[in-house]
Structures are given as structure tokens and as C-alpha cells.
Length: 150
Length: 150
Image 1 (cartoon, each protein chain N blue to C red):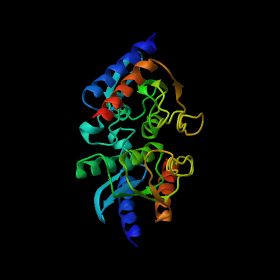
Image 2 (image 1 turned 90 degrees about the vertical axis):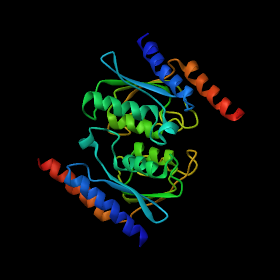
Image 3 (image 1 turned 60 degrees about the vertical axis):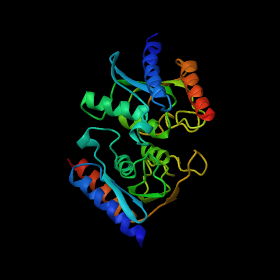
């Protein structure tokens, strides 16, 4: 139930991205059942290839915590992170990662590669899949369908 | 010869990180034989897990270029990028990557994993290794030796 509620907050972020013409992906970071950071993809708006939802959310959470280690934090993200974002999650020591929908073409948490494989790197993340999967993938499909039509 | 000159500029950035007590890694980005961006690791200073030399250099280069695609750009980095940074290099469409020394424990360009494997993702990067390898690895070893002594 908690996962659904928090993933829905990440989904709200994805909707914000959609309305800005950005690939609709959203992420939030939770600590002690409290949302400490929320973000959506802003690559086009900021003209920054690193401005994915997860990276922005991690930067904001670090500011809130006042350090780079996001210990006891959980990230909810609507789509499986790419290698950059999966790597950032490892770097930030996030404890739990809850993913909406898989990204078969570019996902780095099991789909295309698995950077979250146990003991591959010096930090392990608990990964859970499939929370609000349909909602998260539907908005992506709609976004890319609209682009192809144009 | 050009590679040595540019890698030496990346090494100068690594030295700046060393003097700040940061893991000594430096990166520069070159376009048309001109350095458009330079950066060193600032994770501790900025309290930001994403503040690796490569990420900062990519953000700065995007600002210079005025867009997120770093087409026709070459990155010189003293140590093999981690998954986050290798992923950011793929995201930014950097064309060439020149690496000083390998990182057997955490490198994502062939050592621990190979995110740069041809046709794995939707962008291919030409990767070259071993330019100023000894200098780049020596400053890392000295840094970690000093930490262990303390």
C-alpha cells in the first residue's frame, strides 16, 4: 500500500515532465516514510544530458540530508533507470529502489544490463519491480506515439 | 602527442582534486582541438554523490554548446569512469573517450563491466586506454595510502 502511494507521487512527477514535452519519467526519494526529494526529467528544458529525474532527485536529497550518502533512503522511479542513473543510485548508497515499469531497451537494473547484481559493486541495493507498472509505461507509450505523429 | 597534451590537462584537474582532499580524478572535454570544459571530482566539497569530474565536465560542456548533445566531442579522463559516469558519457553522445588508467574494482568501460561494448546501447563511443596511465594511477595510490595512514 505504501509503495503504491509513493509510486503515485513519482507518477505525478512523470506527468509534470509529460506536460513540458519531456520524456515522462518521475522519481521521489523517501526517508522514514517522508518524501525528502521529488523530481522529473528535465533534459530538454535544462539542455543537460544528466538532468534525468533520478539524478535531480539524488542531488536534492543530498542537499536535504547535508551529505552525499543517502543512507536509509528509498527511491521510487516510474521507469527502470538507465546506466547513468543506476550508477548514481549505487554512488549515493540508496538502500531500496522501487521501479514502475521495465525499460527493455535501455534499463540497467536487469533489462539491458544489471548494475544492481548482488555484490557486483561495493554497495547493494534492494530492487523491487512492477509497482504501478501500467500507468508508468502507458504515459511513456503515449509520449512516443505523439512524437512519431508529429 | 595531442592525446598526451590533453590528458595532461585532465591530470592537472586531478591534482586540484588531490589538494582539496578529493579522490584525485580529473576530466576535460575537447571539441575541434579546443578545451571547452574542465573539471575535477568534488564529491566531498559539494556533498553530492553525482559530483564526479566527468559529470561536472559534461554539464559545463553542455552549457558551452547550448544543448545536451556533445557531438564531435572527446573526453579525456584520468581514471576509467564508474557506471554513473560511463552512462552519462553515453547519454551525452560524446564521440571519443580517452582514459588514463583502468579501475579494476569499479570501472565500467571494460574492467568491472563494459557499458561501452559496441551496440549495447543506442550510442557508440570510441574508447582509448593507457594515456599517461602511470601518472594517473600513481596519484590515486598516493591519495589512498595517505588516507590509510590517517
